[in-house]
Length: 496
Image (cartoon, rainbow, N blue to C red):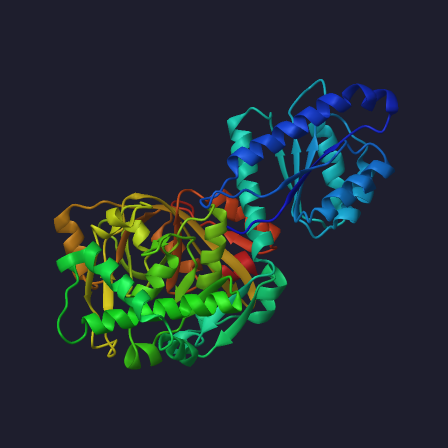
């Protein structure tokens, strides 16, 4: 998975008789932190960001510039400034001006009375903040697990921010059905995230479908047939071998165009051109987001239903924050107040990974059924994917805009395992042939209604709330974490 180099340096005392005695110990602490990061930042593809260690402590103007140049030459996109002893705060300027003040900055100190790194942190980091430079601060001992987790959450957040900064979103067909909350709002998006869009007509995908290898389509068809057997509910009209093969061809076409243009993530409009004249996009979207296909393991490639651009961007952020997990795309469909349960479901792209949270497709597909697409909505036919998400902790999120100012709603919650009678009763109230997440949120219903920006919600496995808050700070947007108890203000008061 894509990542960016992390620079880590140690601030020090400029007095020679002091730094001559502490240099070795300070560099040992620096290497301990670097080793910890190398071991714990490995993502699902087995890669880790390069950790670039300053060759000596920053103890003079000369060393500040020298160490800064070392990070620049290695392409560091974020900086961890360590404090193990008192330092001379003014030395931060020749260092950080060399590296660049636009980088995410973490000030990281011990909590030691004899060698007060935290005093140096507050003096030095305070100077940065006086000039309007955004930083984060963590104080704690290197062997403390709480401190370690905070540092990892910050680095994941900074990785997300620095990775998406030069990315391009491939938008196939534009936002669907006039959903303006799915529009790619160029100026605030480039300003805060550094991400742009390239829009391509869906006609290109249709033409590319004609060029994909028939053998590869057959290979995919055989894979689904073996996985699902009689759980492919052919009806001779909407779902036939031919309409399923069209969906497979659409997946292959989208994959090919993404590779040719070098897109980083994408969105598929679908309705109405594809869904009424070609095929439904559910299977292709699912496979894009999954960590496998019939050719084996692969990196999930974010693809948003209905070309919802801010959903796609949120998904890409969640993917980086989680270290490469697949991400869920859902409709905010129905709230059940008697159970305090949300039913998040739509015809679109719930990654099949969430059926069992397994990297083995056989385990996930054992709980999946392909149903005929609803003719009422999707005249061209194809398969709708049906399953209930496995139980587990999820982090829900969504980017939105208030008066052209981006913000992110972040909510911790869980997917529930319900008894069969309750599950069927809930699913039948919406659509039992679509995928469902039966969710309980750590957020009161009224608070959700006040601040949630649109009809699509995204989620990733695990607790990523703190990392997302760091991310929002780095990108200079408002993070809103609506709670369960305290009433929160309206969106214009929170973002305005």
